Length: 210
Image (cartoon, rainbow, N blue to C red; front, side, top):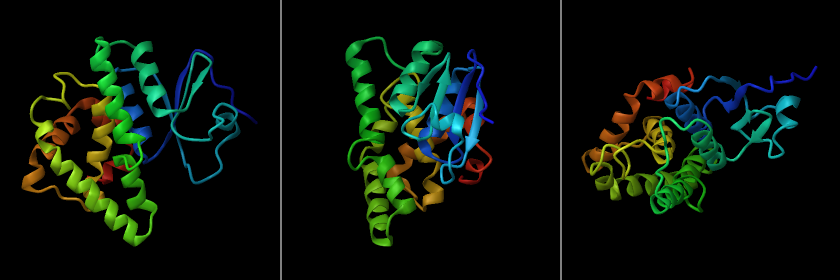
């Protein structure tokens, strides 16, 4: 039997351990959104009620007010507009565009950090080693940007931080130690990890990563 979600519900269909799902859970916790989080195994056939709503058959998928969204950036921006406090995107169009571009660069662009993590988890041994080296070097290279402000190039948390926190949380699991050269990046990550909303965003599986 197909489960029909309540039209007034806000439901997140989430993977147990992937970074996009984690980023959305972090945002929902930060905004204290009344929600139902349904953890699914992306390696198994997804339930019919999810397939009916997400043509991409991907996670995360958000169901809200009868609307179905399944792209990370779209979900994040929708939640920020639908639940405006605290705001996670600047009002200024130039600053807002910069944050959007950073999210694209970190999560979806060719060679993005999210892509490199995926290669480390599922690629060949050679490809994984190259991705690991590239990700570590990139984080160390931009490490000074993590110490200029409390959040990434911002005085307040944005959707960029919501994407970076899940990635940094996984570094230990991935065998990446930024050491002294990357101390600013590590300190930045620890500031995010200390947030109650981040702690709430963790699945039981993810709690074991760090």
